[in-house]
Amino acid sequence: MIVDFQHHFTLPELMEARGSGGPVLLYDASGAPRSTAGPLLCDLDEHIFMMDAAGIGAAVLSSPAGMCADLAPSRIVNDKARDAERNYPGRFIGTAHVHPLGGPEAYRELERCAHELGFPGVIITSEFNGLYVDAPEMEPFWGQAERLGLYVFIHPPLIHNFPQQYDAYDLGRSVGREISLISATIRLINSGVLDRHPSLVIQMSHLGGGIGAMMSRIRSYQDREFWGTAGHPRHGMKPEKDFDYYIRQRIVFDVAGFCGGITSVQAGLLEIPASHMVFGTDYPQEIRTREDVRDYVSQIRKLGKDGQRILSGNNGLLLKK
Image 1 (cartoon, one colour):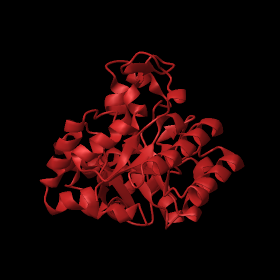
Image 2 (tube, helix red, strand yellow):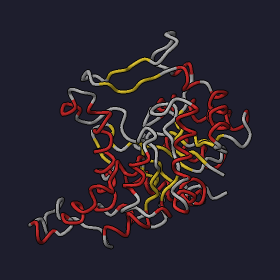
Image 3 (cartoon, one colour):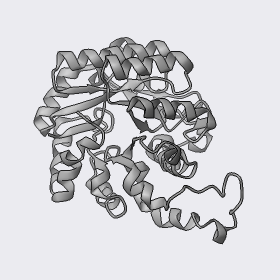
Image 4 (spheres, one colour):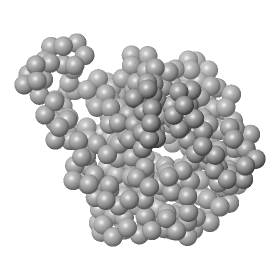
């Protein structure tokens, strides 16, 4: 069965822009485009029609309104995701939405999502509140996710910590989010998060921001002695194993985020094994029509055995049931 591991929804009451009847562009405090929100996010009936047209059996739901959000909207999103599971049996799977720095209340909500709601994962963004995924403040969150057996879905930021460099041409969304994901992947590995939490499972969005195209350069800079950073308390840090081990064995990469472009998947396969890729669409944000999703599925299927692994063969990496 094909599972869409990056599939977004929201609720009318949490929509920041309503009443227009069409997509509305939202901006962050710096004036940079943040997201294009539209009524399709709330229309789960249309989601089902799209999934049927594309041959997608189930979709894992995540909501921008609950990503690293306060407790109240997080709980609303979590409850509505469970409602979607009940209203469309077998078609939707919820994920936990909590703020990773939300403290005891957020952790209680995380436990509720794991034990009462039965969600398999939790979603956070690659940067938030001026911090990144390797911040020491994140350590309790990683421990909680590992203890509860929840995979952590790392989505690109909706708002960048430092958006000034993306002050024109929609750079923050077009490439800034991918830079953030590449950085998050490197930070997770070199900080030792994956070494300290050996059973922690990570789903990294957008093929890690297209990290495959950067791997030769990243490998070179892992040679701390050559580049002169050995011994530096931050820039000299390295993981216990070779960098490629974590890319090929410890992280699951979804193929969403490229607006249905198959060439990005083909490029990713040069460095990331198909055995650690899962399917994702980013619907209905970057892909918004039934036909575009259907065509993307068809293009991945043409990759042969690798395509079959991506579409359905690796579901068990994230879904244990």
